[in-house]
Amino acid sequence: MKLTAREIAAACGGKLLCGDPETPVTSFSTDSRDIRPGCFFVPLKGERTDAHIYIEATLAAGAAGTFTQYEKAPENDSHPWIYVRDCAKALQQTAAWYRSRFSIPVVGITGSVGKTTTKEMVALAFSAGFHTMRTQGNQNSQIGLPLTLFQLEPEHEAAVIEMGMSEFGEMSRLAAIARPDAAIMTNIGLSHIGQLKTQENILREKLHITDGFGPDNVLFVNGDDPYLATLRQGLPFPVIAYGMGETCEYRITNVESRKDGTAFQLAFAGQVLPVFVPAFGLHMAYNAAAAIAAARWAGIAPEKAAKALAGYRPLAMRQQQYEAGGILVIDDTYNASPDSMMGGVDVLCSLEVSGRRAAVLADMLELGELSQEAHRKVGRYCGEKKLDFLFTVGEEARQIAAGAREVSPEMDCREFMDNDSALAALREVLRPGDAVLVKGSRGMHTDEIVHGLLKGDIRIR
Image (cartoon, rainbow, N blue to C red; front, side):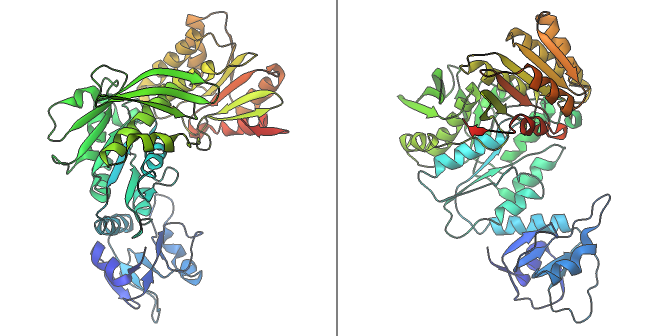
């Protein structure tokens, strides 16, 4: 990326208070600790901290210039200071203007569960035909998405952008910035239902990813999701479904769980394509199907896209598998929702192990008034799966244990209020040949349990 202070001010409607308007800018940062030469600082004002207090330090550290919400700048400062009413909005406006300079296919990805994994698979499939830029990590927010778009370079031929939201109105703003040409919606679950109240509201908000879509754009949806299935008709642009249902344009069949991953066949347009992904769980087949469908829309041969997907590797804390002391540890601690919890249990039960299966499940946050029933639902699912051990961590997760006991009273369920206690108990009961799933909302820090289990001789499975 290369912009000038003049272009930035024009893009966001700001006022250049001082400095050379032709000063080159090569990146943006909202973190005063992450300043490199050519970086333009974005001082955000929060409830507790006003990052304007770090402006002088960032300029001394090599920042090229800064936004400011105060219409004044130090005398004789040679750095560009651009006055704006709202630094976050100025960042978004500049990113939207920068995005408009690229005439390349952009795919936006949203959903309650599976956004990041689907994004990685779509980017991998696109790599079979394009030099592709993708969202790094989960930079999918009101601040993360603009910073992602500034990663676009002239050599990029496509972009895959993850788009997350948790409040009313957020997706509309993201869609106006990213302007995707195609979109993928993975599912409509309970994530953020505490703020959005109903799944119908979640669907309506996420559908704003298609703001600005016309007949030449396309929306790919999980056709087996009851909420997304309602979108198959009535929209002014094509809606293409992937899934196991007979009406899906990209139909998943013959799913097989192997020692090294998941194999299935994908039927579409009169052909059947064998697909293999070195990752576990039926949800991985859905993610791969979405990736192949999007790649074909972009003009990439499905066979090439499928070949690229065979090189997929799970991201950190997303069902990564390790072996330590003969025990298989499934690290799925990045985040949690009811659907992803049950998906993680499915993966645990699908693996071939010589010993017992255990799950450590912590609180799922931001579920509002539905929290108790959502946790009980997960517990009942664990009971149906007949796990050998179920350990819960946190006050809300006690309902998981209660739900499991409803279905399977004989199950060994133990409740803990902190990670250290759960870890100590695990070390007492686990033995070589066992497998254990560890999962919880990010705020529960269940990765601490994984780190404790992996002390010693570790190898990635």
